[in-house]
Length: 453
Image 1 (cartoon, rainbow, N blue to C red):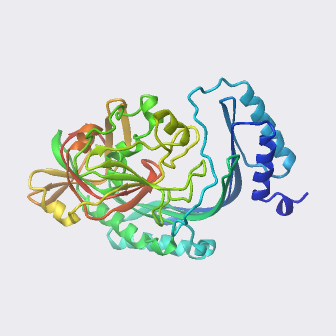
Image 2: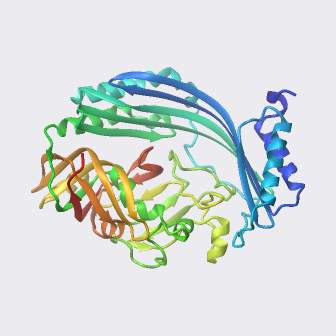
Image 3: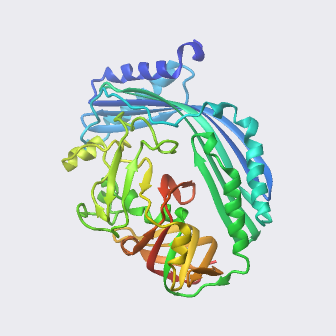
């Protein structure tokens, strides 16, 4: 039996669904992806790693008598090997305890609307241009004054399929790219830039390199900052991490396990009225967009926070039934999952936001090592990295270093006083793993402490 002739992805999934349905389960989801990925890594202005990998991944979710089990496999060399894996899944499921509050998956079939700009056919031949695009970013950073840069360009494409025993059958092709560059003047004088998306005509390594190099040069001669409470101007990169926190935590699973400060907050004001945010899987060119969630429910936009008021949690079918509401098309099977986070822009240009900073304000361009010290109360700390600057009298005065933000998320989001009038798509592997469209924000009375390198 030849895999290319008889074991294509669609055949595998259809046979697997039939095989699992023989046991009269309540719910079955079978999904698979055929993907090709590429990576160029660079350091000190040179490409040091070039990789290509292609694989097939299959995921199976099975529920009988409210006993839930799932497995992932990547071997489709023979249908017998797949059936053996499914037999193991069935045996494992039979010995599990039932999850009494499990509410099932969605009933299909559904009609799906195409989300624009999720697949760019030019991605197939992008390898021919990838090195040039990296060099463009590196040259841009050096032209801005940086000595050297490091980072990564990843891109790829996949074909995704999903079937359930409730009439769902979806197929979707997607492409993606992620370019991240960090530029250095010295080991402690640095800046970061990025460009991410799905459509190659939006890849801008030149601008990303220029941003990274410019921030690195501007941070030359940074002095240690001082303890205190300051206003903070947060870049979109930082906003996507710490201001987007309540959108990520508006999740019944996270609340149930005690890892969210939003318990019993639906309908309450949790932030400044300047904050409005959505979970939105329908944004063109966004890395989290898709035609359907992991149950096959058509993608949608869900209002999470409106003018500071928590309006909704994200839901899958099971959590929605438990809460007496409806799914928001955010399955995750075991728990709901965000797609893209969209924070609405405000009324200020970035230059106007700087001019608003009359009293001492700290401009933070990026951050890492965000750590929750009390998740239920939203207590956290994070370390600014790369360029950080003191603003006073509406102008940037000097670069700073060695500070930590030690705050609570409730205080932070309630103290937003200005929002930039445009957003950027942010995603990077250390802090912002959910694609987030974020503006810069001005936040008053933020606690900064010293002792950080």
